[in-house]
Image 1 (cartoon, rainbow, N blue to C red):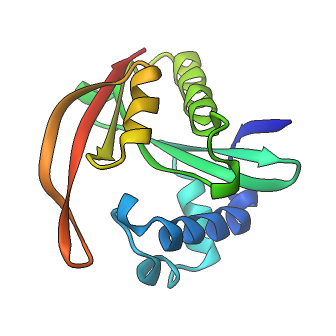
Image 2: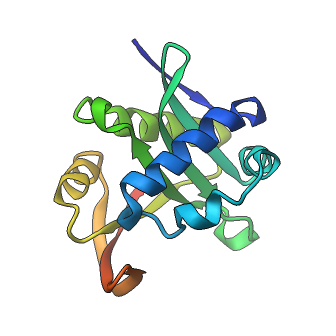
Length: 166
């Protein structure tokens, strides 16, 4: 049975390993790059997992971290009701089991319990039809398109901007 739990600095080694895998296997889906993050020390990953304005939830199959998603909360007073989902990744052999949806739902539960965040944002590649469909099933709606949002290798990638109120 898959368990969904917020990660702490104690999970930094497993998080670093899975994050680097994500950047290698699906580089087009992330703003960062493997070559950049491989340079980051374990301490930097510990710090990332210790930020007060961000929560990373992991999916665990036993002791194995198989999925991650991060929620970055706005810190300015007038925008504290907003947060952005980032860095969604599930190991390929576990895809198709609603693991990313379960991780996002866990983040939404945490946000509801805190009582501050009311609106979630995310950005998804226009070409990633499977992810778009999954996000729409979770209640996210497309509210815009960012043309040439990222440069990937030798071409630009367009992204949809999606949001959901909780």
